[in-house]
Image 1 (cartoon, rainbow, N blue to C red):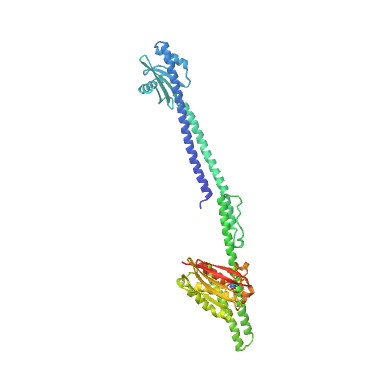
Image 2: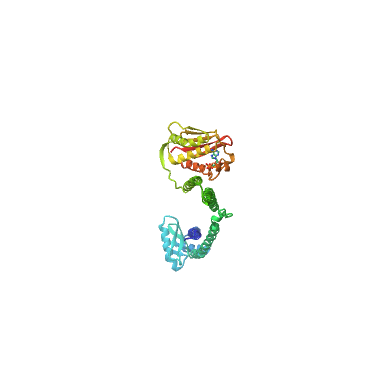
Length: 462
Ligand code: ADP
């Protein structure tokens, strides 16, 4: 596994090494170029000065070239460079015997050139050759060349000193840059290590813990914030799961206790057939309640796991609502509640018929159960352009404003005693909400305590 820290430091090192190297090459090139240019300028100007002096001297000495050349050389006394005067390619003065041949070559080159001043490199003049500037002048049909020559040795010495300096400084610079890069990436990435350490200590037991990274780069604080948000969501899900299991066990306990109690009592001594029948009827009733609860729990658990496959089919919502009303009618009649169904006209819809039926029945069942005798329940189907609304309104006990949001939570009962009395588990509305949402819709509630409630389901047309 490659360490990000090492990788970043290596990239940093490679980048700076290349940068330093390019910089050194450019600097070296620029410096050696400028040294040579300066030398050439000096040589050109010295050759020019010497030529001017020679011209004057020739005038004064009436054409005695040898004398004039010797005179100007003793006058100039150049340091570090050689000034030579040649007539055509014959050396009159300046230079040693060894340099004579080269000087003659340089003068020939100068004569061949159309330019008055030329600068040429002279090979084999010292260890690194030499540069020369020539100035040509004519005096009474005679051609003279004044050469200023300087060996490149001193420039070469300076440049080699520079090279040595670069050779020592470059690795040092690279070393410092590498170490700096390592320290910087180490410091920059330190919060990641601390985050990993903290994350390792978080288990299902302390999901309320959060990552602390203090002051760090914005990317890392963003990462920590996202991680903390994830933890919050996990914490909420865990909490919801815990509550669900707790509530479910609690709800299962009551019917089981009734069944067991009833069986214990029936078996404690001999009973009459009527008594046994009564006990069995109670057990049957509680078992039915129990299997209804288990069905609901199973459905919700499947829905949570996203494992419910909707069986979509074409249906008529008006028929579906009318049939639901018909099946709740006996319960409404038994409770002397008027049940009205306003679902006329064909409303074609694509959805899961069984689930939609379950949803409408849950709402109608609630409306009837939570309405006093003499009250009224009305189911209305309202087709709209983009969706279809199913409205179930009752004139029942209503729901307090603080409970309107919570009635859709699992196991929540707005009116505990009443609801239990009505055989409710507090799961009906959460199932309604899930079914509506799985059809890309939702459910809304408006209610006034004492005056009644209206549940409006919105189903998107697919
Ligand atoms: P339950 O099985 O207890 O009825 P629900 O999830 O269907 O569970 O409803 C949750 C709670 O909402 C109920 O306990 C009840 O207090 C309240 N409720 C639901 N429907 C109505 C209604 N039509 N009128 C008044 N209260 C209602």
